[in-house]
Structure formats: C-alpha cells, structure tokens
Length: 464
Image: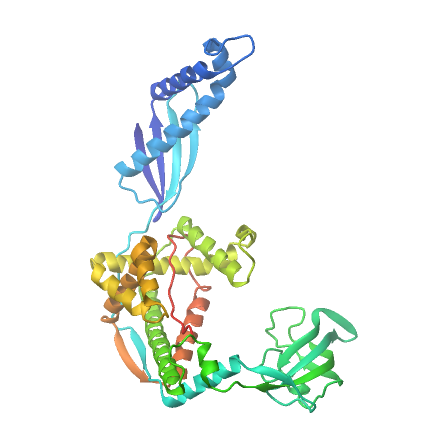
C-alpha cells in the first residue's frame, strides 16, 4: 500500500491510497471460491457450480464487497501511520477500480484542529455577590402559594390579577386572521401573556360582557403578516375568577415532601434551596463570561462532522421541549436552525478540552464521590442517588466531565481580572439568565462552520 496526504484546509485532508492489484484480485478470487461452496443454481449440485459461472453471476458484487472492505482497512492503516486525528467518517471515492489494475482511492476527511491555546489575561469578569434575605424567602413562599392557587367565580368586574374565561376572534380590518381566535381561553390579567394592551382593556369587564379590543402588534412580532399591524379582537367574557391562595399550613408544606411540617422548618428548607439556586446562578454567570472570553481569544475552526452530532442532540432536545413525542422523526427539523448554536458549543468544548489536557487535569474518585454526596443531600432519598451514581458508569463519566469543566473554568479565572459586584438575590438570578441569553444570541453571529464532538452544558435549578 502507498498513501500520500494532501492538506486542503487547516482541518481537511485528502489521503490518496494505492493498493496493488494482486492483493485485490487474490481477495476477490478467495471470496469467489468461498461463494462457490455454498451457491445453489438449477442444473448444478451444491458446491459443484463451475467457477466461470460463479464469476459471471457473482463476480461484480463480490468485487464491490471486497473493494469496500479493502478501502476501509487501508484507510485506517493510512490514518494511523500518518498520525491523523479524524473528526468523523471520511468521504471515500475510488478513482481506479478495475481488475488487473492497482486499486486507487481518495479519502477526504476532517481532523480535529491543532489548538495553540491563548490565555484570557486582562479579561474583565464580573462576579455577583449576593445573599438570600428573609424578604427573599417570604417572596418565594408567596410565589409557591400563587403556583398552587385555586380560582373561584366572582360576580364583579374583573380586576388586575383575576382570571377571565373568554372566547375571542381577531380581525385585520374586516377579515379574521389565522391563529387569532380561541374558545374558553383562561387568561390571567396582568400576566402579560397576550400582546401589549389586550389584558388592560379587559379590566372592568364582567361575565356576559362583549368587548371590542383594539391593539397594535409589535413591529418585531414573530408572525410577519401581523408585525406592526393594527387589529381588533371581538371578545366574549364567560366568567371572572378571583385567585385564592392556600394557607401555609401542614397540608401545603406536605406537597414539597418535607419531613418537618411546621412553618419555620419550611422556611429553612426554602432558604437552603434558594441558596443552592443562587450559588448555581453566580457560578453560571461567571462561567459564561469566562467561556465567552475563551472563545474570543481563540478563534478556531470547528470540524462539520462534529457539529452534526451536536445538531442531532439539539434537535432531540427541541423535540422533547415542545412535547413532540419519542416517535417524532427529528430529521424533519431543519439542521440549519441549530447550526450556529452547535458550532459554538463544539468550539467551546474543544477549547475546554485543550485547557484540561494542557494542564493535565483529572478528577479523583474522592472528588467524584464527594460531589455525589453533596448532590444526594438535595433529594428525599440520598441513598438512592448515591447508589445510582455508584452503579452507573455513564452517569459517573458525565459528572466527571462537569467537574473537569469546573476545574478548567477555575484555572482560566486565575488569568482574568475579577470584579465583585454586589447584587440582590433576584438581580443575581436575572444577570445569569441574561448572560445565558446573550451567549445564545452570540452563537448566531460570526462563527466558522465545520463541527466537532458534542458538548453539553449543565445548569442547576431549584426542584421545589
């Protein structure tokens, strides 16, 4: 075998491989002999079909099969001998494939980029400093009460915070527009779930009223045919309901699976959960800034063979998020919708992997077990969580990746200028959320198209 490698881009190689005709022909003849032993044809006993007949009937298919096997085998050998690091399956084309002639084929493949990691020295990172106050706890408990509220019919005009049950139909001029109508819709006034101006005009309405509401769709409304348009909604009010909040008593507290049912113990548990959420939000806010600086300092090409794996994961995630069901064929979702996000994720993953590798980072069993124990305390049955991670190698590897990512971020953080910024609990949560949204938008901006291994992110949330 002879192999030559041509560099067609920083992350693409063309490998031209030549295999002697004798090797191919011998393999084809050997396979035909094996085939002759088992073939059955009318007029011949099994195993006694003349080779000329076997060659005529099966020669082409056998050669195609053998050539495919030989190309795969010699491709692997060539990649190994030339120390290439493929990022996915190659595209293989036979350029000479004739009996009696040397087999020649070209394998086009993407390789992982060579990364010369640049530091993020001088980068300014804001680190929120916040704490959970008693007022924050009371506000959270009030939120939990609202989430578990009931609605009761009232015989009065609707006020802000009430729920109205309505039928409505939307019109542009005199013509009803598609998607602008519903029956029996339950709308909480003040929830801002409808376009601006709609809910406000229902304040003061009573059950049985017919209302005509005029609104203007925002200029950036997602439905282009409605964006910036003035519309009229004809609304029928069937009922007005007032919210009834549950008392914070033993029955209410029991919903959250706590052993202690008294109010003070409940507040302690709520505060613990909020503190975990705050800790996660601060860490995520810092991490997203560090990763943004890392990708800004290191503009690398990302192989497309890798991004396709990430795109597939994002498609499945989207299908699950929108409740499309396990049987939904995710290939129906256009890959280009996820391309930019996938490339950015892969890019970040490759850079973080280089940080881990170049600093020879690892996670010990003691560190892994300590994190499992920490996580287990957040659940009603800690032993079940510990047992799960103790017996599930895949789950342990995923957790190990999370810990390695944390170590990489901490290492990068030592290169940056960290500024502590005092915030309230809510401000810290909002800052983390805004940072995450900003990074998602940035993924749609300028990125090199060519993907790599899938890279996921982990974010914490309060499971109350």
